[in-house]
Image (cartoon, rainbow, N blue to C red; front, side, top):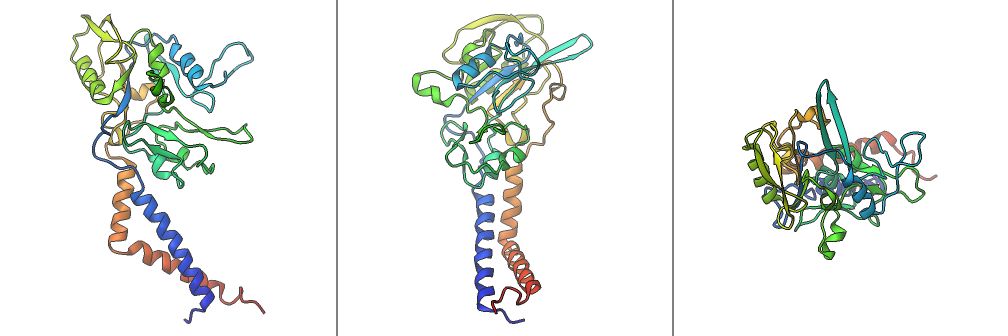
Length: 311
């Protein structure tokens, strides 16, 4: 088969785009082995949560988010789940006499699939704090981040003529004011605790070793700057959710019931970003991806024949 000059140029251009896209997906992803040097996060303890929703109110105030009405009553803010107007929500699980609360928000993954899927780097993981941030000026509205997130967190503003993606950014706009995540600032019981991730991991391990029924000191608001209150320890499920899931997250949870009861997905330890990185590197190592892309484009050119030739 002979290739005309125009077909050759189209094939070369198409191959370049595919190679660029493949390279971005494979090595522009945020796969990493360790926590960022100043990683910040939240430890949420379901056993300490009383469902007061002070964290939700503080989140809306700090992020200038509107109220959301899920029923005919338009007086109260009563969202049912995360949305483009609600970045942080407390939900309740009941089964017989068992009752537990859970806080849902962005998990700030160590290897965020949303950032890996974003073709324009509108979502990025801060190299210092590890917070997954969003740049509305870079976003093109493709919503790949929504599809990629295993926790179903990023939300799209469908009812806005200039829509954005909305998700928790750990109130990083407050850090310069000496403040931190508003949900943790407002929590009266220590259920939502802010601070360096390594300190929070140690605190979570300490709580797992507590004897149920005994009283202990629990830090409140900020693990380094806050006060402490005494609570009677309850029994915990022996698992820190977020310590291992998909490579780990900077938002971690403790609970007294199975996390699947609280609506959290059961996930493997290896992140999807790392899986993709391995596959892509393998393909590029043996030049399979470029060869397959070139072959596909040549096939398309052959099928079209000379139909695009001008008379």
